Image (cartoon, rainbow, N blue to C red):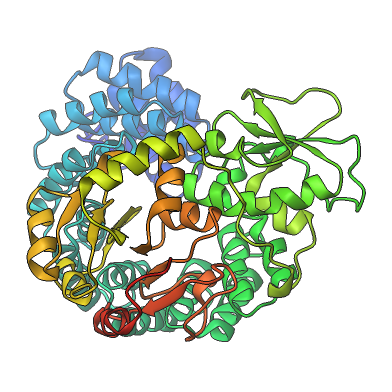
Length: 558
């Protein structure tokens, strides 16, 4: 507990010195006895660093963080190079949410003691909290250099490598960690997450199973087992794993939410949409939301639809707006929705509602993702078609002129990559170009952020001219018009697909593996995307089957 001996060692009587007694009590958890001795020492020696430091630990042990902070601050005032006190101040400040202050004290701790492994680990955690993963990695690497076989340090370093996208390095580190400490359940869990990022689902499942052998009722491991089972298409097993997680921890909201996806994939939509209410991104606003099922007659009701942050999700859930209007509701779209401009083209959407802490009297605030539950969607047969957005005719004329100037029809729009949390999902461009070979007409590249060389690769591989209209990808109203004009659209699921469907047009969908609930099963169609052809990748991901299916499909939709 203390950096040096206190009170000059034991007296001639052979009894331990008072400070040693205080420390012995502290180590044994006898906080009252330790505090009493420290206060006696401080009464005659107010600047006794060891007594102040121990008193800080007494307060910390009692979870009195404010008193603990004061004691440790007195220590560093007396000794600015007291590394452990700086470390403890950093820990307390992180508990108070002051990451910047915590970082300053932890930097002081490692400056005072460059061999202080714990302080480097704490500093790395602070840098992660400040969204500085590169700085976190530096701190964890210094800790690992000091303690190369310390399980906590190795876990921290591997986890930050995973966050930075250095997945292969993270896998190697986690594998080293579980070989050093096979009973470290969290390490098996983290290894599984890293393997999953590489598409190595079978190995990931095995890693989770080893973790569960160590900790069979760990809710996070059970929930992640459910994720792995879901991604292999074993929806019944996934549901059972989520239920086991909830048996172990009934308040485990993540497991309660994740249950939605196998239920939806199994067609048990009533249960699935009820579970979907637990999604974490509505926690901050759920207190002001209407979350009980709607009446059949909504005449005189004003409903404000609140976005949950994702434009693609907003577009998907706007398909339920016509039913609100049919029941008599007046609908407004929240200003935060990236889809607000196109939502205004829906019949019955009367305006944009400002964002704020609370709605007007008599107005129901509703999260878009709650609509299927509120409207009583029980089966796939209850699913409405995609929302019928209306393109702006004047814009359509201008875009038609641009399209015709770009080449000769038929025109095939192409999107092959989707950026998402955790990385990108992409169809191999050269394979896609080959699959489109011989289709005739002009390819229209609509890929966000595509490097300049990709146009040439698409032209060379397909043997077709390519026009780059990717400058339109952030213009939803413009895309809406463009999708009425394209003869064909080949895409990975995303905003473009939602807009293509919104104008009543089909698409060739390149379905990644693993699939989400809208593509559950093995068929070539989905009730979520009427008229569309599905070209499915295999787990791996292996895009060969999808590209072969695309190459065999008709060259134009309309």
